[in-house]
Length: 396
Image (spheres, one colour):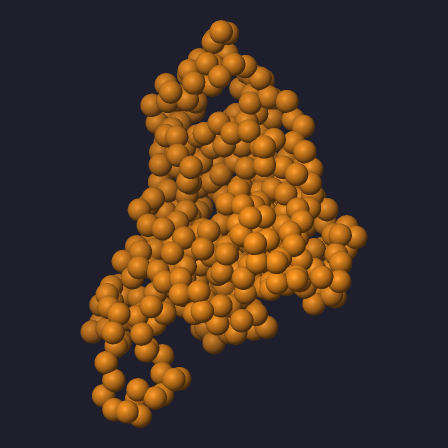
C-alpha cells in the first residue's frame, strides 16, 4: 500500500488512517470507537442556534455524528474534499450520477459496468431526459471520438465487476478534463487502499461499501467522495434526495474498516494465488484477473494499482446446465450469492452476453465469478478441484 497525501493530516499511511480517523474519542467521553447516535430531532438552546444554518448538526437525516465519522474516514483515505454516505451501493451510484447530469445532458457509461448501474442509467436517467450511451471498456483516449456537445459525464468501472476489463482512467480523465466533463469511478473492487481515482484525474469516486469496506456481509452502505470542484454539488444533491444511512450500518462500516488494511492484503494475495492455481486446472480456458501477467489489462493494473481485489472470473468449456448445477450445488465452502467482499468465499455462474451492448461478449464457454474469502487457500482449492471434476464428469 502506498502513502496517501491528505490535507491537514499528520499521518498519511492508510493503515494509520484506518486506525485513527473518524473516531472523535475526545468528543465522546474517550470511547475508542465512535458510538452509535440514533435520532432524528436535534434540540437547539436558543433562537440564534436554531437559525444558524452553518451549525454542523441540525437534523438526523443528514447530520449524524456516526455517519459523519465514517465520511471523514473515507474522505481522508480518498484524499477527497468530502464524502456522502448512502444506504446502498446503488444509491451511491444514483446520487453521484444525479449530481453530474441534468435533463438534456448525455452520459457515457462503460459497457462493463455493474448491472444495476446499467439499469439505473438506461431506465432511470433516460426517464428524466438524460441520454445514455455505453462505450467499449478498452477505449482509453479514443473516448474523445464518442464525446458530443451534450456529454457531461463519463462513468468508469475498472476493472468491471463481471468481465474485469481494465480501463485507462488516466487517458479518459485527460480527455474529460480538457472538455470540462465529470468523471465518476466505481472503485469498489480495489478500495481506496489499492487505487486512487481522484489522484488520477477523476472528479468523484464511489464504493459499494456493503462489500470490501464493511467486510462482514452484514450491512448495506454506499459512499461517494468528490474533489473540491464537485463537492458542493454532490453534497447538495445528497441532501435534496434525502438518502439517509442508518447510524447502525454506519457504525458497522466503521468497525469493518478498522481491519480493511489487513483484509485487503490477505484478499489480494489469496485471490492472485487462487487465480494462478486455476490457470493450471484441466478445463479452465481463461482466468480474468488483472493482477495476472497473462491478463490483457495487466499493464494498466500494474501502473495504476498497488494491489488486487478479491473478485475475479474464469471461463470453462461450454457444457450443459446440469453440469453447472452439479458443480455449484456440491460446493462445501464456496457459497452462491450476488454480493462479495465478506469473509466468506463465493462463486456464481453468469452469462455476460445479455448485458453487453457496445461490445458484444464473444468468448465461448461458461463464465463463473469468484470471491476469495478468508478461508485457508488449500481448503478452497480442494473444494474447487472437486467442483471442476463434477463439471467435467457431467455429460447429460
